Length: 582
Image 1 (tube, rainbow, N blue to C red):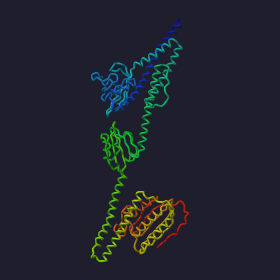
Image 2 (tube, one colour; image 1 turned 135 degrees about the vertical axis):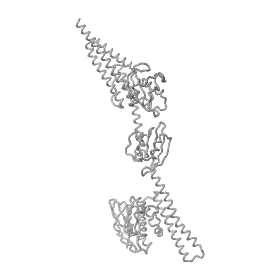
Image 3 (cartoon, helix red, strand yellow; image 1 turned 30 degrees about the vertical axis):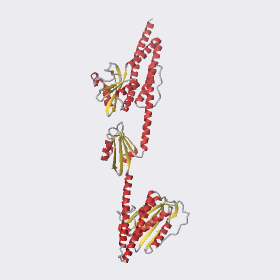
Image 4 (cartoon, rainbow, N blue to C red; image 1 turned 90 degrees about the vertical axis):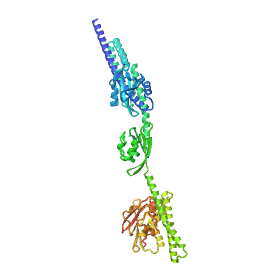
């Protein structure tokens, strides 16, 4: 009897102790998991409220309460209640003191906070979780609340089951209770780990297996459901973000997205290059990165202006900047590099002005000479002189028009060079022989050193040599003039240098001699029939064949014009003779 009573007492004490332990453990674990689940729901609710800028706070709170099953409240930056899903519109005289809401105070200070206390609204014990966000540019706090009573009830039911099992099974029941408690803790630990991952934004990993206990199975099922929904939402957001990022990165123009307070939310590589930025940290103030004061003020004002347009010089680039304010705040900025457009406009303007001036000069001379020749009393010798002037300026005008047409054809891309093997020294000799026939009285020593077979357009090479020889003959001295053509091969190129012993070019003029209508000696060039387009044509012809043109000169010591042409792949033609013509 005594042993039985002792055993019964031991079982009873053991059962009471097991009941107390089970209730305490279940309560603690369920509260912990409820708090974590509540934090995850609060995070999603904050994102939902932030996204619903055009909806009323009351409707959002009610919708969140229906979808989550929790009580949802919203507070402003002064901790005043704005909306509550359970109690409707707040009453100013019934609102508790801000000190009674530690979770709201903590969220305003630290973004998120939680607490467990009795609510002043209905006197019930709640678990609270709050998060701060910005709505219409001002901070608000959204708070989720879960009543603690169901947790206590669930823990009580678990404890009663444990007590009954211990009392029925005795010592075996204690062992079963121990194992059952361990199993319950393991299931709840699995739920806790899952909610911890969710709170940290990690949705990957295994799902929680459902327990045989209904309450724990419900908690595990809810955790699995939250995980699935969060994973789906995060997947959609991630896909949209990646697609938008790829689109912005592939666009050739500069793109920037600014926040409401003019911070850089997103910038593509083209915009970084145009603004000279190497690395941009997220949410950096645009005013701290853009150095140009005009552009900086324009970008900072774009978040409050509907749209704008600005042309500004940044470094060596001309940029066109367009901005448009977003419907939900912030602004989108487009940067377009218009440097080449402005350069071409300037080139076109200069070309029209120079061409008009060059055409006007011979036309003026022709008109004046023609008016003079019409005088019947003009002596025969003067009449012949003016007629020769008319003829000379007519020829000059014809050459100028021909050169303009050729240059326009080359620059517009209407001409395409042929790709055929040719001997450069043979073409140079043919050009010189033709010039000697046209100018038999000029005594100039001419020599070709070297040979080379190139791959190019023979007619274009012929015109290059003709322009270079004519330029050289204008400036070499009348006695002792010398023109030398040096041909050599360097890897895959044929290098040609046309050297004379003329008057040379000043260092200040050397970089500009390939420009259209540029003359070092304007009066002398026009007197000898130059159009000012010869070297410009040379540069375009050589460039079209895949080569480059250059020049070097010393004032009073002569000039050397160089150009390159791609070399032929084989030299199976029989080379012609080397020419050395006096």
